[in-house]
Amino acid sequence: MNNHKKKEYTITEKYANVIMLKLILPITIIVFWLYYYIWIDQFKIDYLQQILHGKNYIDFFIYSICSFIIIILGAILHELIHGITWVIFSKNVSFKSIKFGILKESYTPYCHCKIPLKRNIYIIGIIMPAVILGLFPVLIALIVGNIFLCFFGYIFLLAAIGDLIITYYLLKYTDSSSLIQDHDSKIGFYYI
Image (tube, helix red, strand yellow):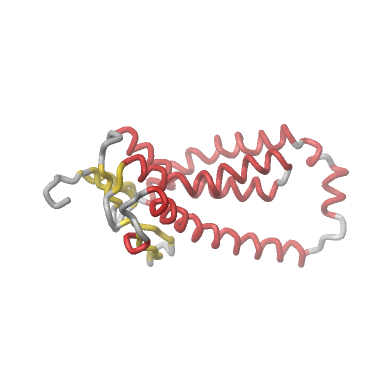
């Protein structure tokens, strides 16, 4: 690795957030329009009254606390999925090659692979949280009609925007035979 020139591709959290703000409306419209279109009966007044009957402020407080805990655990699981995927798909990666932590400035969990990976394996690891925590829950919610599961998947699709931006850069600026080194301190990678 030291004999090769490395080219850095990174994004800032601010840039990822700007892109997320640009994508939030189209993603929201697609996900919730589909849900509404398929499960329109859930939005009729009679159905809503039946669901809300007997609920009080304590119930809503408990739902809010549970939702917060689920989102925190989901953020941690998001990073674990990156690492587990790289370990499963790469012969060279073990959990000794993976570093997990929390950025002190933003309290953001992260996963870092210390060794270079083939581009496509790196991409699989990058997008897997979006698939497992975002896309699959949304699709299951559309099938079974569970708005809470739909919202969970929606939140984790948005949480994966940075990963999807990195995937875009990988596909645009590298070829499939490339070795990719995960950046150790920024959102991004080195192209080797």
